[in-house]
Image: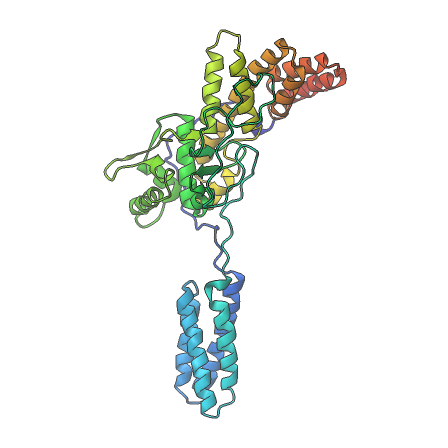
Length: 412
């Protein structure tokens, strides 16, 4: 049985281990551009050394410029200044009838163009899997209002719109199947995940809130995650928290922290989130008397269609590894939430599948249950109802295949 299908609970303890603040691999230092510039500085250093050996002290200036260029490769405009100096040095040499100055002019122009920031292209910090729940929205583009449901729509109709709780222009957070934060200003996902540590902290606090609503974590625990071993860990964490607060609203305000408060919390502040919708729906079905009203069936179909069969916070392991090298307990928290969401989704699917079979809508039951059964083969109740739906459709071979595969899945 794969780890994703394991419904066992994890023992989540306060973070007291060594999380190890590792250098993030989000942005490599030695990019192609910087390697080219480094080669250029090496050539300038050699030229300066030759000039110095010829008893000309100006060679020492070129050598110093080359060393400064290497030391400050990450400072774009200082690098440009160095190559401007090389260019000017070549012009002076040419005016003094030194033909080698032409090489300095060519090098100053060529490497100076490479040093300009016009060639830098920032890639998205994280690529997330898209689905039909919310289409990708370019920054600065206002999302279109969600279409209003038809008042006389039949409950049996296939759901095509978002859950009923979503209102036009309301901010929305999607965590199941992909990571996406959409507001009136557009899609803020890249803004959040551009800096790996900030993206990790925000998602980790969200996951703890999903794991235990109202949960608060100590600063010491967060230090173990993102600032262990640095010179001033509390100052480093304080800087991260300040940066989180400066993120575009409403995502920045969701992290609840005070200067003298040891505990850090997270609150959606009423923002629509898919995992909250699924959890609320599962609770409503669980406390029901066994029969599900038509409107709840339609709503459940819409929610299950929207969230899909995929996992909570996909790709979180990569984000965690980039920020902390994966040495904290954040992965355990996310795995626990994934297991809980898988079970809630299966619970809702079982109840809705039974209701659809009672209404003679076996085809819709198959459409609903089949992707969930493919992910949750350890859930015998999902497989049983799916098999029954296939039999009612006259597809006995597929019904037998579901039963066989489920039996194998439970043995693994």
